[in-house]
Structures are given as C-alpha cells and as structure tokens.
Image 1: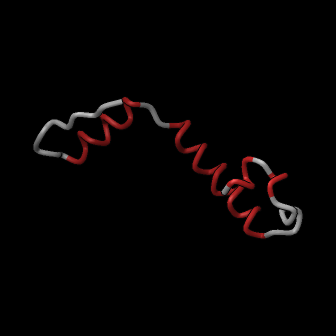
Image 2: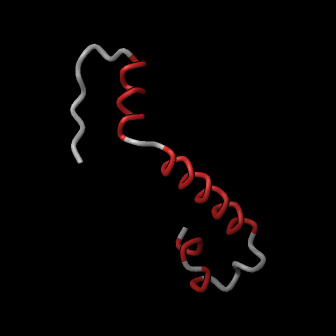
Length: 58
C-alpha cells in the first residue's frame, strides 16, 4: 500500500482502518525479515530434507 510508506498520498489515512491494518502487517513483515539470516534459510532447507542441493541466486 502506497499510503503506508507515504500517508500524504491519501487524504483518508487519518480515519481509514485499512491504513492501520496495512501499517501493522508491514511492521510485522519487516520484523520477521530482519530477524532471518541466510544461515537461517540454509538451516530451514536442511530441515526440509530436500533431496537435491538448491542453488540460490542473489
């Protein structure tokens, strides 16, 4: 949602429940992403027991 990043783009942000909801969703998502490392992803892949080595490109 564009308004979450810049509330000035929408005149309804002060009374819009969707604005608040997307703000909370964005904050939660950012927290999860900040808490994970590439090592975490590697460990998750190992736990899945994928039969072939996966190749990740950045």
